[in-house]
Amino acid sequence: MAISMYAASVPVFQHMLRNLAHILEKGEANAQARKFDPSVLAGFRLAPDMLPFTRQVLIACDAAKLCAARISGVEAPKFDDTETTFDELKVRIRKTLAYLETVPASALDGTEDKEITFPVGRENKRTMTAQAYLTTWALPNFFFHVTTAYAILRHNGVDLGKTDYLVGGQR
Amino acid sequence: MAISMYAASVPVFQHMLRNLAHILEKGEANAQARKFDPSVLAGFRLAPDMLPFTRQVLIACDAAKLCAARISGVEAPKFDDTETTFDELKVRIRKTLAYLETVPASALDGTEDKEITFPVGRENKRTMTAQAYLTTWALPNFFFHVTTAYAILRHNGVDLGKTDYLVGGQR
Image (cartoon, rainbow over all chains, first blue to last red):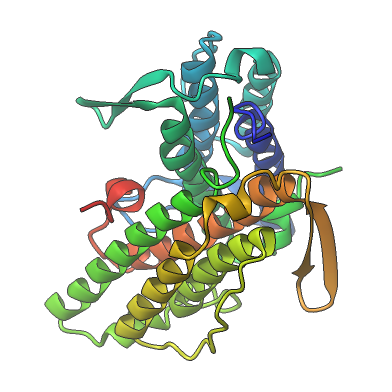
């Protein structure tokens, strides 16, 4: 008995992407309540040379999508990264969740030792086993961008707590 | 074949705690190079009602320690959370890594369905299977605090990149 590759990946991504959608909704509602343009939040960066909120959300979505696609081999839709509004970001999360729904457990289970080659930055590549790629690269990277999106809103006074991050998307 | 409970937890915590120690070193070196007191970074918060850098590091350490202890039953040392300096935080990370070294794979493997009851906030408790607790609670919480510690330094101009977060602790 152990954790299947599917259980360690797709349901975790789905759970956290739903939490991210919930966090987005709280950010948008906060901008409306405080009567400022939500695009200020959408474009906010924690440092001038860090990516803005929108990109944190897009990369979180792609980290989930590409991890599932690379390991399973189930082709993923290509998105153009043109989202700038909260509504568009919510659609992107929904499209990512819709893709993850199409990845069957059977395409991931048993892939622990499969070699995965993936881009690192613009010019480099790395190769790892699927298990190492998932646990030490894809999941840390995914959580990094979900947490940074949360931190940007939290830094700007959106009323978020750890519960929103951990279980906010559970209905 | 699948991922063992040990492989999905302890080596991931160890890998990321080493990266966190590396991030701390860059933060401390940056304060020295820019000639300001590192305690300013150590006490910095991204929002007035968020926890400061020191607490993000302590909670990341405890998230790893308590997850391993709760699932394995291997008793964990109790720490007093008195750390305020970068040096003390580095010691705390080392003590957490030393504890994780004492947790044998055999104490974690096969625990997927074991019921884990853990505190949520000051008054509540939740119970989940060890697998659900690890993948949807302990790991997300651990990555949250490592990333928030990174974000606090990055927000303050420390020269960090994603590589530091993902593999900075690899020697």
